[in-house]
Structures are given as structure tokens and as C-alpha cells.
Length: 331
Image (cartoon, rainbow, N blue to C red):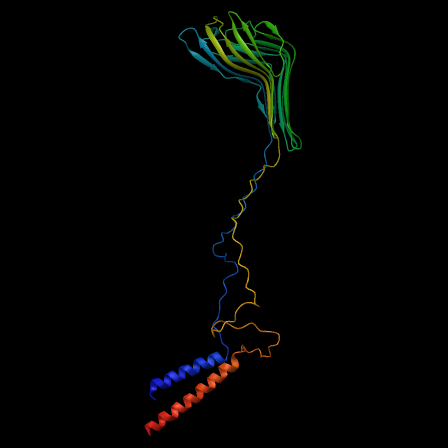
């Protein structure tokens, strides 16, 4: 027997001895925090939305007019607001004047006069409210200094947005109403048209109210005017006049949009039943689960240990015989 045979026999003996002791290769478990393969991580929850800030506003008069002049066809916009306030604020002015170059020799044009003209807006964590009150109101247009486009005894608008109740809006026009010098009867919620030959036409919307789950607006009177004064160098006045306007937005917590849900994954495969699983005949298949009747010492051995020990003993005897024969052949 040559040296190669001896080394091979030694390697076999070492492997047999290792198997006899029941040693098994170490198994490293994956970190518990690592996500399973193919399963996406759950999306992070979105931050909660900021609470709604209560708001309120009110305006006694708002104009959006387009004034055309006789000489040169010049057009002058008149975008004026009287007593416009935003919470928290209060304003009381009974007159509004605007100055238009080329109209009435540059003197101020009085758009509104009233005995009482007040606007108020308040807002806190409990409620938001805007309100307007007018008494003996008279609205004029450029080119019509002596003829009021509308006169009203009492005008009011109010919008209330509580934190714990639905918003409400109300608008009232009490007493007599005169349009372009003619007394008219208005019906709340309906549109009325007044036309005066040689002067122009006015379309009126009375008591407009709008509410949502968190907001409210109220307008007592909205006028759409188209007049042709033909004096004071004014050829035509058209646009919109809004009388007594109020609005609000309720306080409260904004609804946070829900975070997207994690995509559905297929259910995990059920664990095999130990009673039906076939035994692993491979020596490297791992240790066999111990049964209650096992009497093995806690040394890492299992039921295959006697067979492995017998095989190791046989290999030792074979090695000794081979070594003796090798020495005899050299002698």
C-alpha cells in the first residue's frame, strides 16, 4: 500500500468520526427585521391634515362696472368696495365715493349713501360669522347723479358657520324698493327686470343664499345694469352692483386622507404535517426530531449513531490490516 492509499484511508476515518459525533454544519438565520422576499413593505401613514381655520367676511357694496366715455371712447373700470372686512373686523361707513377722470369734470362720483351702513366679521374656534346691515340705502351710477339706480329701506345679510352645526345663510330686503325711479315688488329667490326708456335696464336678483357642509354665503341684492345716461360725458355704464354680501367658513378638523393599503399577498403555504412527511435518509439532511421515547444523551447524537459507530470500527480494522500488509511487503 502506497502513501496515497494511507492518506485516503485517514480521510475516510476522519469523515466517519465526524459523522459518528453527530456534528452538522451551522445554519445562520436571517435577521428577524428583514422583509420576506416578494412582499413589499407597508407604506408609511400620511400625516394628519391641519385643522380648518375659520374665516368670515362681509361687504356693504361691491361694484364691477365698465364706464364708457363719449369723447374718444375711453373705457374706465370701476371696481370699488365699501366696508369690506375680514374676521375679526368691524367697519361703519355711510358713503362711498370714487373719482373718475373725464366724468363730471373730475369731481368724485357718489356711488352709495346710507343712513346706516355697517359690516362685521368674527371668527373663533366655536363659530365664524359675517353680517351686513343697511338702512335708507341709495346707489348711484356714473352719469346718473340725480337718479338712483336702486333705493332700499332696510337691507341685511348674515352667514353663520358653527363648529358643531350646519352653516346657515339669510338675506332680507325689507320695506319699499325703487329701481331707476320706479317702485317695484321683488320676490325673494326670483329675478326681476326693470327697463326705463331712454335710461337703461336693470336686472335684479334678490336674496341669494348658498350653503355647504362647511361654508355659507348670502347676498341681499345683486344688480346687473346696462344704462345709457348720455350726460356728464358718459355714454354707457354696464356691469354688476352687489349690495350686502356676507360669507363664512366653519372651524373644525380637516379630514385626513387615508393612507394607501398594502397590496394583497398570496397566503403562505401550509406547514407540512410531520406525521405524513417522509424521513430524510441523507446524512446531511439535518437532525431528526426527537421523540418522547428517545433515551439518547444530550450529546448531539441520534438514532443513526450505532450504525455510524459500527462503520467507523470496520474502517479502523480495515486500515490496520492495510497498514500491516504494507509493512510486510516492505520487509
